[in-house]
Length: 569
Ligand code: K7E
Ligand code: CUA
Ligand code: CA
Image 1: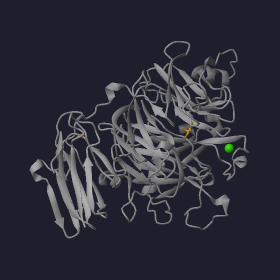
Image 2 (image 1 turned 60 degrees about the horizontal axis):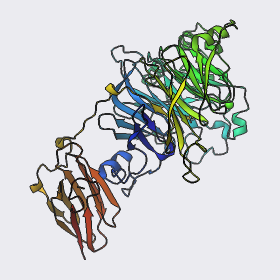
Image 3 (image 1 turned 120 degrees about the horizontal axis):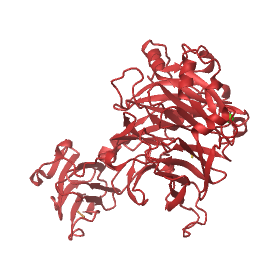
């Protein structure tokens, strides 16, 4: 299970069904254990300001989704959003490390994200090439001080990022906002729920209308418009922005967007594993709305007159419905925030009921969870191979469920066996805030590299004999190697005022033999895995002797694994 960690800014990896946490992967946060935000390599990924400092060291991850091939996770990448600083991060699944971060222009509150599942026009491309990103907060465009009080002109954009290059490909100007994002299995559509079709600035305005929307994007047409030059740009951004506003898209045969009305401040949009339906929870309405993929395509073909007719069911489920997951056997599981429940319902049953057959039993089971669930998700549930084994309810509150640990409580992650007719709660874990959203991947899909290869690192030294202190004016480069239980240099000397770059290569080849490198009173701390190279750059300002030591327990002589950094006056 891979979880986005909310305002902690990282990604977490758990084993199931035990719920044991294996690893945290820093992405938008700073992590002094691995040195994320400290090493030059990680800073280059995160992005730096003119002074070489990390541009943002905060983040708020909400949604996490892996790349697909043929409708199934392919084990290449995980994509994770940062709502706070509008960035998309990419984690390589072979090393479980973040390798790219892209900042999206022209938006605020980047919330929902989902990779596409195949190309909308080229049938040979059956894997993820784009990542869709929705922005929740509307702002003046461009946002450099004009139009502050003209609130009616604030807008949100829907963005598309290239999954390989991580460049922002295009954006769509929309009415309303974007909440969650989903992508269709045939590649043709992306969808986002909209809770603020009112385009209100204050919360009472945002919930004044009875109906909001689920908004659909016709990807092939949008890319056609970009190709034809039918776009604008804002400010310094070069990203093409096409017009997806309501009034500009009333003719279905040319429309880029389709607004399907649903009640009320909807939350979450999830597509069923057969690719047929989008389930949107009502949040302020006790319902979920089921939208048929085929009918939205019919509207774009000019065959379906009223967008509301794309809704094929709207079952009443309970209070505060947020997110829906599927078991691949025709059942849906919706989290009820206010009722603190998971409700299991039949998709076909809900459709028949909506068509008028009131004898059908729509709701099949209810299970109390503890307490106030946000996301609920099933094993492989967002793929064609939904296996119907497990559902996890990530609950926002634990209250009195665990040993008290002070005013900040953990949250509760509850494992539910959904293989039978009745849901069974089988395990729960306290989890550090905040596992916001997660996905459960079958383990055979994940194939990791357990040891690096030195030739991946241009700065690596191949042999401890290449170690040394290399001076060019005031710039000093220290090349050093770690090999248990020693660093290749027992000491290295620089002069006050030098700019020092330390390049550390771990020459140990054995799996799991990681070393750390920390310098007393210099705010430097990172690890190097077997056959890995990392570097740090800093100013030597304080004359004296500073011990460098290995922080990662590596050997019986781990404590003795030290070196002296000497700054001469
Ligand atoms: Cu995933 Cu909370 Cu960001 Cu629903 S949204 S809980
Ligand atoms: Cu090397 Cu501890
Ligand atoms: Ca609303």
